[in-house]
Amino acid sequence: MSDIPSKNEDSETGAKRRLYESIFRDIARDIISGKLKAGETLPTVPQLCERFSVSRTVIREALQHLGSIGLVDVRHGAGTFVAGPDKWDLLNPSLLQFLGEIGTIEFLIDDLLEIRRMFEVEAVTLAASRATPSDISALEELVARMYAPDVTPEQDVELNLEFHSMIVTASHNRFLIGLREQLRGALSVMVSARQRAADPELRTVSNAMHRQILEGIRERRPDRARAAMEAHVQGAERTLSRRSRDKPLDSL
Amino acid sequence: MSDIPSKNEDSETGAKRRLYESIFRDIARDIISGKLKAGETLPTVPQLCERFSVSRTVIREALQHLGSIGLVDVRHGAGTFVAGPDKWDLLNPSLLQFLGEIGTIEFLIDDLLEIRRMFEVEAVTLAASRATPSDISALEELVARMYAPDVTPEQDVELNLEFHSMIVTASHNRFLIGLREQLRGALSVMVSARQRAADPELRTVSNAMHRQILEGIRERRPDRARAAMEAHVQGAERTLSRRSRDKPLDSL
DNA sequence: CGATATTTGTACGTATGTATT
DNA sequence: TAATACATACGTACAAATATC
Image (cartoon, chains in turn brown, green, blue, orange):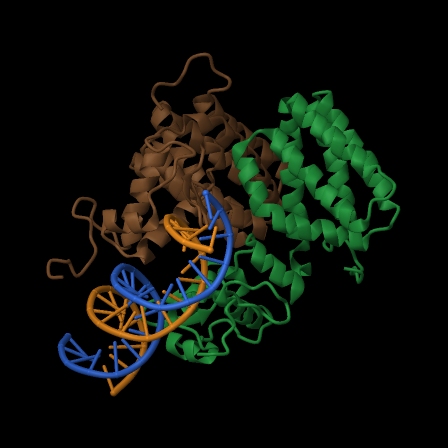
């Protein structure tokens, strides 16, 4: 035991702290990419220990995480089995991130757009009847920043996510706020995808809509805020939806 | 080491398998009940090891779980701090169960009703445009069972939850289905509460509404299904809401 | 500011229990 | 029944973050 680094770092990606993570990612990759097929069994825990040169503790942790997002089914006494896509927990941010990195999320786009529409529209309806003065001034400040001329595309994505996040906060529904955390990864994937797919001029249109939404909230007119949000989300649907199109978007 | 039972069982409740669970529950109880106040520090890990006579592994697991539902904040190098209610993860089923057992969930009822309304209404709208013949026949069979004269209150709760669960399945939106799992605990709490609070005659009214919802789905009329679900959920809101009432419900 | 003590984090190896085959 | 495989818990060692003097 002499050449073990004092800090666990991946030489390529840098910044990896937990040993189980790289193992988790390795196996997850193989499952998502289809290299490991549903129903197959993984090697036994001692075999995995040897292959990855780690202790049972680490392998157990990796398998637990894989199990918690539905990629494998660990059965006491029997073995660890690869699970099919229907068992995957699509709400899990790390799984979504993998799907974005490795495979494709195209097959989820329409489901995502739907859930986004209902979530955002309901949130803004509540926000328009409940936002506090401090909620509103925070939103105003954010919208002002969106209008700045020197906003980079990355910043624009960030500001967009922040805008929608603030509206959920302003809904003052604690479950909605909890669900926002669950959906954060999914929404993030979509906002980025839209920006890649859309015209550069989109930002002007989008900002105008943000302002309308804000007006609806500020004037405490839930119907107006709701309608503005519906229009806004429909814009994303037009850009990204696969269901309502004949031709596929190859820019996605 | 002679009188240690070969299986970890709680003599009272029976069926407890993991050592960390009882510790987790002990501490969670003290936090939810207010015995431990926000900002206080828990004993150090070695102290907890001694107090509960278990190893670090077990204490660590208990603290991790407490942290994952937001009851404590474990800070590397500093200690473990009790978190305030605003940090609690209300979507977590075990936390909700605790709140039901120990404290009260009254303060959450209105938030719950709102989230339920939006969730159910949107789900049924999608279901009405997408339900497959097998979805529909499963719903029909379930509604028929609801009309049986000898349904116990417990069965009625179960059938209700199953009805709503099936509608989500029939929406064929994979994220909605994922969220259903997240919300299952919360919805369950509410359906039970309603049954306790409502008139016995409610079941007749409620069943009629279930039938209307089913009709809307079967006829592929999203608007009709949506309206029926809205009426149905408003019934629950009338029974349970605290926001729209002057007098508190003492039957809750 | 720096040295030191305290506290949590990670990983190891091992022993034993329990479910499945 | 026996063999296999996962599950739980223990104790230890060292690393890393924080607090304190």
